[in-house]
Amino acid sequence: MRSATTPVVSGQRASSWPAALDLIQSLSGLALGLFMWFHMGFVSSILISEDLFWIVARMFEGYFVFGKPYYWIVSIFVAVIAMLLGLHALLALRKFPADWAQYRSMGKHTSRLRHGDTWLWLIQVATGFALFFLAPVHLYTMMSHPELIGPYESADRVWTGNFWPLYLILLFAVELHGTIGLYRLALKWGWLPSAATEAGRRRLMQAKWLLTAFFLILGLASLAAYIKLGIEHAPNAGEPYTPAWIQEGAQ
Image 1 (cartoon, rainbow, N blue to C red):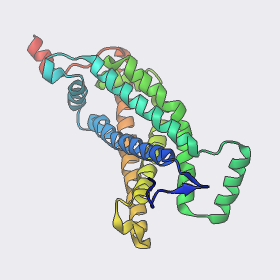
Image 2 (image 1 turned 180 degrees about the vertical axis):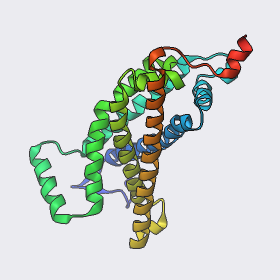
Image 3 (image 1 turned 180 degrees about the horizontal axis):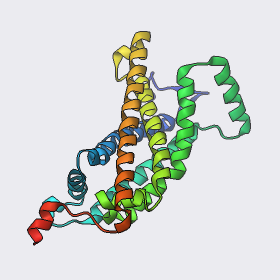
Image 4 (image 1 turned 120 degrees about the horizontal axis):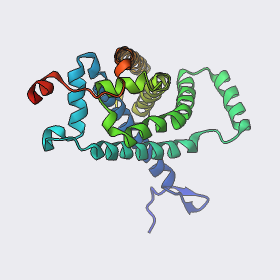
């Protein structure tokens, strides 16, 4: 027996699939956004010391649990992130304009409304399109060569391996896409009751831009540190980093 609250479209029960897919898209976006922040925290440990970044890298390989690194742990984790990213991208494509006529209509609509959130959505579309092509390059590199994560190893990849232009573009695309996405999720699902008011919405927007600026500055500083270390280590590119206390213990 049909409930009185069950939605009906043209005499038929409405499908729940669009809502389910939208929920999965939101949850996958939330997971990727939070991962992005944690990832930036781990990567930026190079700003404190090379030893700290070495410790962080070895931690994810199980070094401090098993006594030696197991690189396949990192490969599996990166593969999970890649699959989550692929799922999120496929679900997001449902809302992209499908042809030139729709893009033109969207452009006219945006210019007529001149609403800030609409422009943010367009930025999210553009950055999402860029991530669709750029992110797999980085993920494949990490998944296929997890042993090359460390102070010297990462710096050599950034500078000697000429990955720094890719990482520079990825930094802006990821941070803009992620923070805009989290902002839109907070509005969509009503996580912050105050966001329902105009003043609350403005505060949420300010928080979004502060987070964007913070992570961009942190990311640029970290990338600059890897470039500097890569330039210094270029004559010995390929040599892995070993902390001083391990070298002393081996002697």
